[in-house]
Image 1 (cartoon, rainbow, N blue to C red):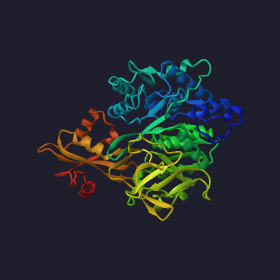
Image 2: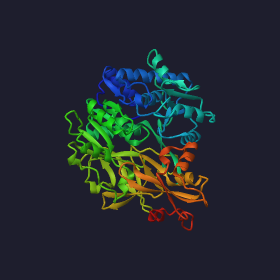
Image 3: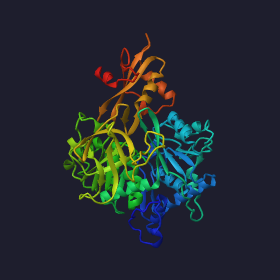
Image 4: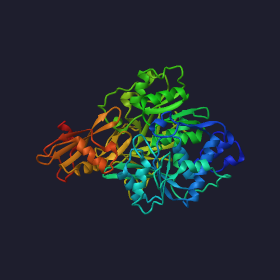
Length: 533
């Protein structure tokens, strides 16, 4: 368990090992009536009950009730469950309830559909799936139930919200029923959180995160930004990725702050929350930050931000020709920090550089202190043979020992990015052409190739990308159609929808080519596709 320093640890029982659920219980003892979790105001319009807010005491009671419910179902410490929840307060409650029960949670994005969920179930063999009854126009719990029907490992499908389908248990009822007395926490027997990324040729790569790594990411944020219990974090990123963990969940627990959830990224709602909640810290894609600056939201007298973060996508970092439509820090009227979510492993939090140097990252250990001292939370290096960008440190998880994100002999993990040294202490990021970075997701290009090639009207197909300041990579398909077959983007989208593929993997447009260029080994030459655009 972690030995990180925690603010307000002022009682003898606070000196023991630190766990995430224990931090919540500690806060509940110290300030039970303080508001700690706040829903986005558009929760109801997204198909759920009205927006809520909870005190530390109420949140701890809900977590206790969920942990007791999971234990009553017969789930044992170390059992894996899959959680697919929007960025509402249900998300941290379910996560901490599972951790209090000693369970390992595989957190999957809301945009995933049956194809991706089934792949996770086959890889991890979870005992339970957790979702919600409705989200916008979708019925996630129904999809989870249908996937579970053909997976022998899944014993329970559970959900939040009204109108859950038959066979899905209600977690709202479990929380309402409460629990008499404190639930005795059960320690996990392995990793606490599993998130996912992709690497070239590997569409689904699990990342196994231990609580120490998650809390270390939170401590890095708290120390770097000098957060304390007076701060209000507006979190626009789900806990399926490093930004949501590193700037949302973990610093909320470590710093004793207030956490305001926002389901990404509805601009008007986000701007409203920024002003109405008194948020003091937030981060967002750099293009949205530029929009807030241009609209003078940050100059509004109600704006209480004291720190604001720019989240740079790998596509932005690796494309020196990308348009610099992002405002410089000095034009935003607030101190700005930069977040680099490298390879879905960890979010590196740095003081801002000039926009022209946004791809220049430290090479070697990253110190929090200006004088080069203090705790090192991450260290970068480059593989000599390939130029692969590697990362290690207490915030960095790993994958399976025989997989593409296994730790090497020195403890480094491959990020899926490449780099080039600039002097002894800086590196410039470049990209792997076989990885697509779209809307916060890392996708193996080979997966998209296979999806498009499966369409009956195509003899051959491949994906290619063009840079976009908002989504990172815009996805396109190059296709060689069957003779006399019509080329229809709509028909391809229907085909992928019927196969249960996540919609962010759909191409925006199709480019008709005589043939897909390949080298002598059969590898797709994507540069030659781009030359035809």
